[in-house]
Image: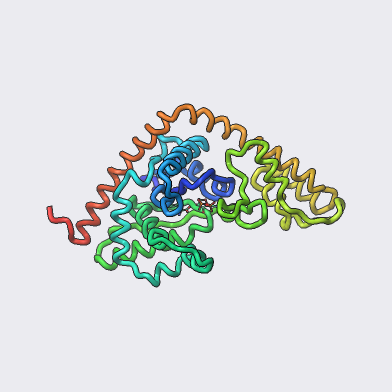
Length: 326
Ligand code: ADP
Ligand code: TRP
C-alpha cells in the first residue's frame, strides 16, 4: 500500500520556539518515515507580516536551517519554499472565486484582528484560501499542526468539498488535521499560549543564557516551600512535562503534591533539562549555518519535486473548471 501523504508548513517570521516545535515541527520529523512527507516554508503567507526584502530573505534561510537542524531529512521529506511553486497562488485565486466574504469573516484570525481594530490586508483576509491551496494541491491526507490551525484545516476541507460539488468532479481529497492532545497548546512563560506575538517564548535554539532568563521570568505562587501544590496549576511543571523522562516526572509530581519543592529548585532543574535537550540542536544548527550552499540545494531540489506534483494537479483543476483548451 502506498504511504499516506503528510504536509505542513511554518511562516518564516522569526525564531521558532518550543511551542512550534512540540506542537508541530517535531511531528514533521516523527512522521517522515511512515508518510510521504512534504514540509514547506510559507513565505507568501509571511508576506502579510514581513515587507522588507532583506529581512524576508534572511528569515527564509533561517527557517530552512531550522528545519534541517531538527532532523528533517531531504531524502525522506520534500522540503521547499512556497514561492517556488506558483501553482499555490494560482489555485488560491480559483478558490477565491468559489468562496464568499461572510464565510471568510468567520475565521478566528480575522475576527481577532477586527476585534483589535487592526488594519487587515486583503492577503490576510484571504489567508485561509492560500492555505487551502497549499494543502489541496498535493492530495494530502494529514496535516500535522498545533491547535490554533485547526480551523484553517477545516477551511481547506470545506473548500475541497465546495470545489468538488461546484464542478461535479472529485478533484480534491479531504485532508485531516493531526493535533497531538498533550502538546496542542504549549504554554508560554506567562501561562498563555506560547506565541511569537506575545513575547512569552523559549526559542528552540536558545542559548543557556536565554533559557535561564526565560525560565526565571515564569511567575509562580507565593506559598511557602513546604506547602502542598497542584502541579497542574504550576507553569514551571507544565514545561517539565515536555522535558522530563516519565520516572523523573513522577518524582517531581510527588514532590509538588507532598510539599518541599521550591520554585528555585524546580526552575533550576527545568533550565538544566531544557539546555540538555537544546544543546545538540544548537550544534547542528551552527554546522548548517556554515554550509548555506547545501541548504540552498535542498530547497532547490525540493522545489523541483513539489513543482512537478503541483503542475500535474493544476492540469486536472484547469480541465475541471473548463479553461484548458489544448
Ligand atoms: P506563532 O503563534 O508563534 O506565530 P506560528 O503561527 O508560526 O506560531 O505557528 C507555527 C506552527 O506551530 C503551527 O502549526 C502552530 O499551530 C504551531 N504552534 C504555534 N504555537 C504553538 C503552541 N504554543 N503550542 C502548540 N503549537 C503551536
Ligand atoms: N497557517 C500556518 C501557521 O500560521 C502556516 C501554514 C500555511 C500551513 N500553509 C499551511 C500549515 C499548510 C499547514 C498546512 O502556522
